[in-house]
Amino acid sequence: MTDLTAALVQRGFAAPTRFEADLDDCEVAGSLPSDLNGAFYRVGGDWYYPPLFPDDAPLNADGFISSFRFNKGKVDFHQRWVHTHRFEQQKAARRQLYGYYRNPYTDDPSVRDLQHPNTRTVSNTAPLIHAGKLFTLKEDGLPYQIDPNTLATRGTWDFHGKWKSQTFSAHPKIDPLTGEMVAYGYEATGMASDDLFIYTLDKAGSVRREVRVKVPYVSIIHDMAITHRHVIIPFGGYVTSRERLLAGKVHWGWDASKPSYIGVIPRDGEARDMRWFKGPERCMMHVFNAHTEGNKVILYAPFYDSNFFPFFPPTDGSPWNPAKARAFIRKITLDLDSSDDGWHEEILWPMQVGDLGKVDPRVVSLQSRYLYTSYNDPQRPYDRDRCGPNAPARMTNSYGRFDLVTGKVESFFAGPTHNLQELSFVPRGRGEEGDGYLVGVANNYAEMRSELVVVDAQRPADGEVARVILPFRLNSQVHGVWASAGELPLV
Ligand code: V55
Ligand code: FE
Image (cartoon, rainbow, N blue to C red; front, top):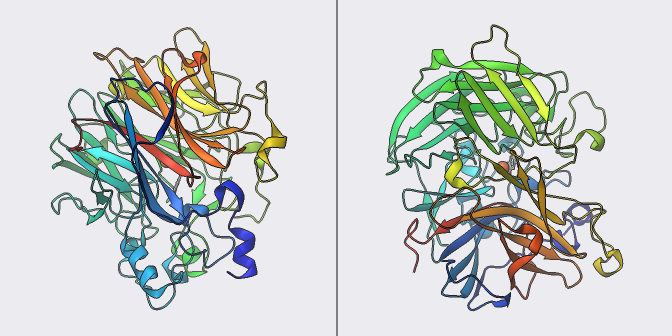
């Protein structure tokens, strides 16, 4: 490793782990609920070889998938790289061949493919379960299909040739009432193109509708929401262009002068029905949920005030401003009867939160009561001495259940040496919203190994019902999802 890459690649908990693993009958503290039958899948990035450029985005690291399979009070753990085209190319060459995040002009000439730039995806962002299949996703390429038991990579999936966008976003939404999936690809016709293709797939995974629209400007469109009537597409701030890519830069820069946008289109609408609402500077990455009330669309989302990612720098040369990289839970109301193109926004809780939030999957598209996300609670103890010099200044030490009806926040505290990754919701019972578990990985800095916490979602303040203790450190998750037995052919 060169000095430059040594400086970039983080040490401590975030250092690359670089291994695949199979571990049966994991150690469990507490008692695993006997009704837990399914698997928790998590996806993230881990550098197999260090990046070519020391200032590259960590979002460019090689995709991996890991799983915790729960059945009959036992837990088995598996972890594999996503064996993407790119992963296999660099493994064969035994070195890093790929350049900056989403910029093929910076790739080694032996793999540079400007005709098919989306074959360089690392598939490192989110797992998706739909129509009995498991996929890994990244918004710059097609999904990779993954064997749900072995985690072996089966190859890319184009929905029987009916998915025409070159890209597939990391956050499709599944309608719990119909099993339909709404998904999109942006930069759909090539790098920096202003084409957005929006698709509806039926519960069997076949493409039923395609709508092609133009975006107001080319930006990260990372997440979306659906209601029983509408599709909602938020974005803002990040910019790219062919010139930027030709200049050899990382795909995105931040342009604070750009407005944010929220597109709203009826689920059964045509391109001409897309309405773009316009707002102030905002970094809009993830959403919680949305619903339609009469002619109003209500969106709950933990948007940031401004650029969250230091490695996508401001285009005007100014330094990244951490003070504005703060997320709050926002309620955004889009009035379809209004004649102007603005929206109404309210910050519902004054506290800063992590922006990787969830709702019970049974209420996606519907009016929901509970929002769940992890956050730092500064009132909780932090044992810095036991965490060592590589620990962050503030730990993500809590999960919150934010109640939209009472305004109350119920929280789970992971411990004074623990840093929580994204949580996922595990539904239980007959369908009452909020009945279930919260599961997620906690990084134990005192012992430099990872744990999976299982928390009763109705009683988070009671502490976890069980912890799965791994004898090693896991790499960083981006997103995870729970699959109940029956959603996938699990053995
Ligand atoms: C995000 C993550 C990505 C990416 C673009 O969290 C946006 C947002 C892990 O990769 O490529
Ligand atoms: Fe995401």
